[in-house]
Length: 636
Image (tube, rainbow, N blue to C red; front, side, top):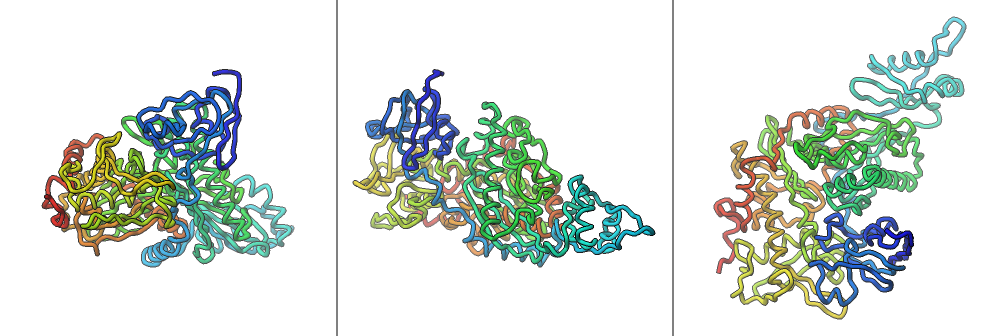
């Protein structure tokens, strides 16, 4: 690379960065703090990292993802373009993350109800960390017990604490605090592994408040809820997109980035720690809470995300035999990873089951109480991956299928995240009229997961595609030939923007994704000799699941054909489970029992998975008897 440098300016934000000549524009965007969609992690195959070059010289390889019209309009793929001189580039509006649909306040009330129900019915309020006010006898010539031992005796008079530990930082300030407070203090106590740890000592009159934060460390979004530990109330919530997205929109590409770049894994850790600190700082500032009064953080996430959080070795997650560095992580001081709360505050992570079934799924099982039900339940978390749990109080089996990429816009020509302008609902009536709803009720600029699922179902129901997903060329519907084969127009282009289409290649990708989900479900059902009618309840979790049209999902064969009243949306169960653990030691113990008791099916090596996947790669399935609801579909 040349020693010469150039300045890359990104509009409309105006952010710029000075980089060596020859630098890849996607890398330059990362350095400038500009988000560009890059589902493939910069491999040049997803076609999402588009930029419009307004000024400057570039060296660009268009690839097959750009049309001739786009090339004529100076549109390039950032990952396949290098800067030769100073550059001014325009970032398309569809890359903005500010208006994405993240479940925070809209779901806080419902999630609060879910946590309250779990705690009231199963777990008593007994938080992992709490404050205890104690008054000690004053030292004297006749009672010269050391301050630390004096504190221990006072604590043991109030609670059962055979083993108590205290860190050096607390011991160093203890005598000064006790003297100033006349030996009446508020002791912050955390329980872990049968040990009571004193993590802070304050004058009793100074602070009776105590807070903690539950965090869903998601691949796409990070959500934080602030909880008052004195009354179990959720007092605020905040969310943001996971800033690791710039290194790849799924965690496999992020692991690859970490392997290929110097300090790549430290960079991944820094991103997620900064996100968590930003969320906690925002909430604390808004509620005028001192960070020292936040004494614990409970994090729930998939196995890879927890590895990134702690900078554990995650390389073997994506390689045979697909194992994690740690599944059951003991509490650590939050400050050890850089989380800014009380200096001695603790970080708890929910346990994982395997490399591809993590603590977020354990949290889902905990909050839906599948582990405690006599009837068979099915839990499906639809996100970047599709994790599935089947079971009851006697047994639980689980698996993970790579289901989400297409339904999150990957490999779909007009696909995008659930942001302003995304088509989220779509219907086609018998007259050929297409009706849709966009997020924000604005002109459509693309189509997100729920809209893609609707589109696939509507094309099938109206006989525009056959059971293999192929367009019917003799159809009365207008089809055009595009770069990816036949296309069906959903929205016409105009002077105010391009049109929206669904292509033959898009449909194939969507069918593969839905087949992955159902094949995972079917593998578990066959292993446990479970029939569709045996399933008493289906729980749908995750952001995508909240906006899913259940009937459409059944028609295309993504979910078992059960009555609608047996399907329940449960929202972000990852944060709900994290909060339940935070508020109850018994819930924490139960989460560990759940992780221990679930049997993991590795679909990559399972002998029957591929057969089930092939059977599910039709609409709705090769075995139509599994989907009686799809009998209304036109076959002419």
